[in-house]
Length: 137
View 1 (cartoon, rainbow, N blue to C red):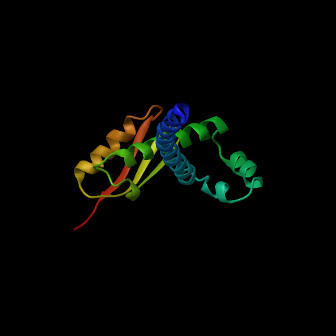
View 2: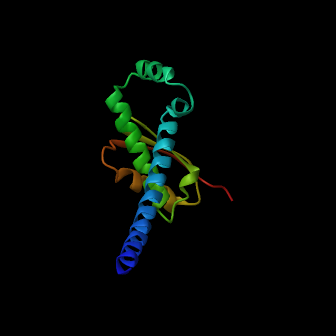
View 3: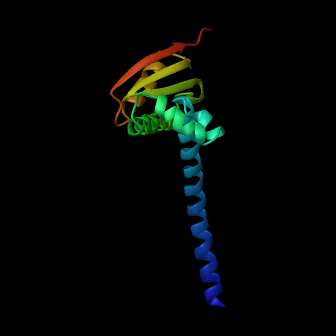
């Protein structure tokens, strides 16, 4: 009988850890999907597999560069989401050849500068194009 409670307690603790990791994985996958969408590959996730070859063949970037850019986009977006001072849902992130473009509306100059700072902190970012606008009141 003692072993039953030991296993039940052990499983309960592991489920909590698993649940937390599952939430983080879900957030990462959502951001990654958003990243693919923002670099022009979102329709591939919704569309058919045949379109993948066409998109990859018509993009002048190599497949490796496209993947690197998507990774950078998702990492920038994830860091923006995690930052409590930034309203990341109003900022679009696009990456081409390591150059990150930030587009959207922010509340003030601080948020604008903070978004650029966050983007610069991601490995692989070569430059930032800041198209963020401050919201008119």
